[in-house]
Image (cartoon, rainbow, N blue to C red; front, side, top):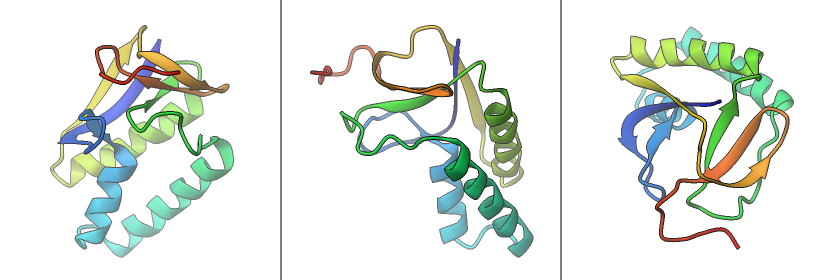
Length: 123
């Protein structure tokens, strides 16, 4: 099982729901985070930078990231980030699937996958 936390705004390239980090960056840019919220988010971002590989560059700009259901601490922290976003009147959807798409990257905690039905398939 894989999980993804997304808002209803669409990612420009993949046309999938934007991820939480993108949503929080936008809230921050618009000045919608209180100083303590921005500081807390910065701490969370540092934790993720330390404890989660960032596949760069992905093999496809259409690929989106999914957490493995076994990444318990990562998911717990994402739920806390989701609560912050929801507190700012943005709906967060937790999407669960056994088939995230064509996997182009995988590590212990996540996969990057191109959704099935996209025009560009992995090489």
